[in-house]
Image 1: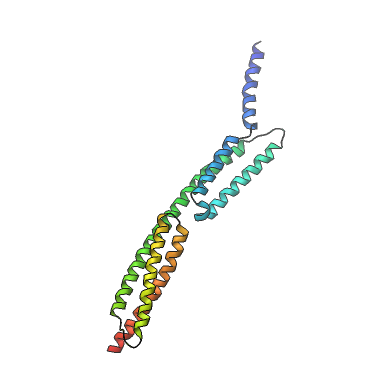
Image 2: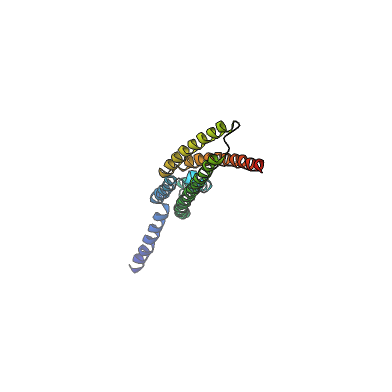
Length: 199
């Protein structure tokens, strides 16, 4: 009788262990999928695409292993469960990476807008000091119009920044910066030539 009880005592834990290893780890799958979805919502696919797509590949590989186990008579998902937990942790890291990258882009845009504003102010001052004779007035007037357009573009870029449309904001700010530098360079050349001619 004692031996019979002892055998049952040994068999039941073994059955529990076997069942836990053979059950489809649906909760872990759901948790990993939710973590990947959070990373996607954080913009990881846009801001840290290499990390995000590596994450997706890890999940696909793990799900393939799970599908392979489902086809076996004796199933064991222990290794896949460990991989799902790793995917979940990696997804959280990727989400953090995306947020850090977004913050970096926001800072870059804000700095760029400040630089462009400074360049525009300097250019307007140069226009005020530039010679207006010999047909120079129309060119300076055209430049003034371009600077006014740049200020409008900066306002739009800043609005996009505030609504977290970072890619569009960055593109608009980059174009504005290139144009502002071009105008500023042209004006400095005009002033340099003007001062040299006076000497």
